[in-house]
Figure 1 (cartoon, rainbow, N blue to C red):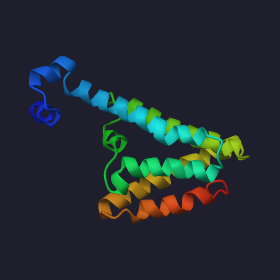
Figure 2 (figure 1 turned 135 degrees about the vertical axis):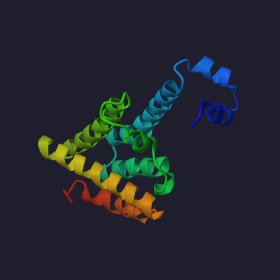
Figure 3 (figure 1 turned 45 degrees about the vertical axis):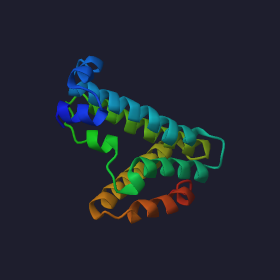
Length: 161
């Protein structure tokens, strides 16, 4: 999007937008990514560290994923930024977020008796399944794949399913 389009959407002049973001569109994108990261940390990853049973924590994580993706059919911010090349300035923060997601899931699994190395493998598998369901939901314009994952994942994650 052009800065003019962004300024109109924000209800600001281009000069005002540049005043707040002297680094231009890249600085604006970094601010969006940072805000989304903080929101997803709070809504998606923090519940995984709770005291409730693991299926409830996983369902809370999936509810946040679903919300962030407009029910499952909208692209999320990290999906948008994951399309940049590995040498792009946003590649490292995106990779770090996915790493924290896997680590948070692995910690929750470990707390439930899953051996550490196996917990990391299962957590990575969960992220792959969720991301695959999101992709399929978007391309089919049907939230069904994500809803099926949300319905089955909480009860199967601790079992290794």
